[in-house]
Length: 402
Image 1 (cartoon, rainbow, N blue to C red):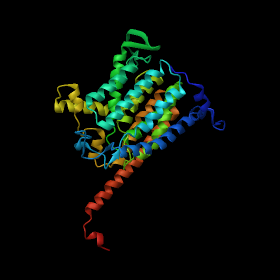
Image 2 (cartoon, rainbow, N blue to C red):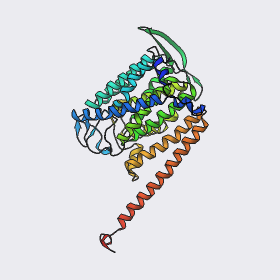
Image 3 (cartoon, helix red, strand yellow):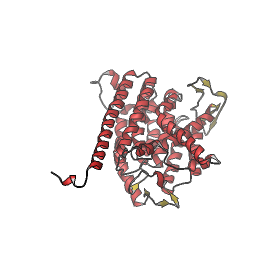
Image 4 (tube, helix red, strand yellow):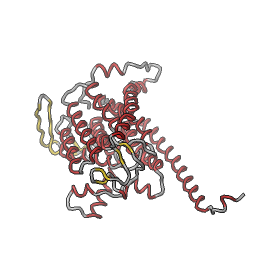
């Protein structure tokens, strides 16, 4: 179900190109090309500007140095190298903030979404600048989640086990904006959004991971949105995908700019939100975020039993090299190989999200793509290991022998 109504400007944009030469099955996807190009163009312009400003005002990550008296990153799990400008996620989130009021009517559906994103963008940007404490980060995440829960976007059924969650419904309005809260569904929705934000945020431990995963997931949401007729989800998803395609190039190792909290917190919210809007259930989000959610659950449980924290806030403050990408590093993989491993896994699970929307053809294409990259990656890893073993076996004298 789509609660939004597009403006004439968005519909006219879809008519900018003549796609009559293409098969009818492709036209419904290709008409979103202008939005993809807007996202890509915005990212191409904004990323260098934001990077320059971050360097100028020293909003950067410096290995081994503290920011405002606190470690930017736990030295034991540090995977970023060199002085790297932060705030890069603004190149993706700023166009989103502009696109929503430009392309869609401001109503009871879009206003809460815009407000929640704005709170996350501002709070996360301040975190990039001032390295905010965990409690303050959790506060603005909670505020954004509560705004969504009190909007007309409700979680009324846990479709995975067919459990109704609307025992009580409270409808009211604030300044003409309709509000709706269902109990206990929207309590669960708040917790679910918080989990998705932080689970996805934690994947950003190595250059290129969160950007590559985000690009794939938003493209998959775009396809699902087209299949289910969700104009809002498909429009925002393809706009973000266009921006991420360009930004991904900057984020690949060696990293030129970091996404930072200004992007990764918002990605988690939007993936969760657009997935729910697309098919009005949690299953899509669960499939798309399988890897981040499993990693999040594993790390939380491991840290709880290892460190025995006395409170939830104390648990969230714990840092350490327990994440999936840290385990891949311990296996001897380099940063580029880690990005490819995570992309393969995201494509594999994402193909089943596509299958759940009835897109069998795209399921086969995405699954084949995942397997193809996996074969190339496996070959590359084996070749790299053999090269290392060969160098170890070489004696200093053998290098000069003929």
